[in-house]
Length: 199
Image 1 (cartoon, rainbow, N blue to C red):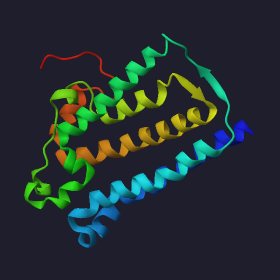
Image 2: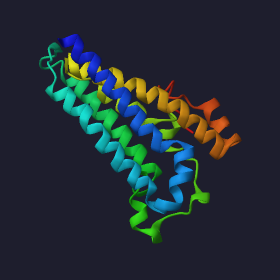
Image 3: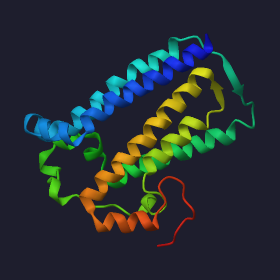
């Protein structure tokens, strides 16, 4: 029964990945851009949240079993690392512009930069890893002080989705920024920092 729950949750994550990735594809963006104009990013984020709800419902409702639970004071270590991951993701969003990230810049056109002025951010947390939002998300997913079969399935499924998503995002960033992003790739790790650089 628990194995069945694990499989269903991973499959739900796969379906979520497909539902989330299709609107992000270049072909769909080109088709939808004239219709949604500047509201595309906001639509994409709302759709990503709505399409994740069935996955979270499956994690909540399907039969489950505990795998481990850390007790005090040991649970403070993963909790601190999860907090660090959440902070890393938050700082990454703040550095690239929270309004643009959420798609809310469409509601404030006077504050929005036109698409051709996109800037490659390589300072701050982006000195350490190229995808701090994903690094932070993975820390939150995997460093849980209490893990069940269903939460493990969610971590496995969303990790697989993030790793596939990173591959396509890297290709998109190379198309957008060209040689500048290729140089950034060479000097900055993808997800795990090898050292905290001074520059």
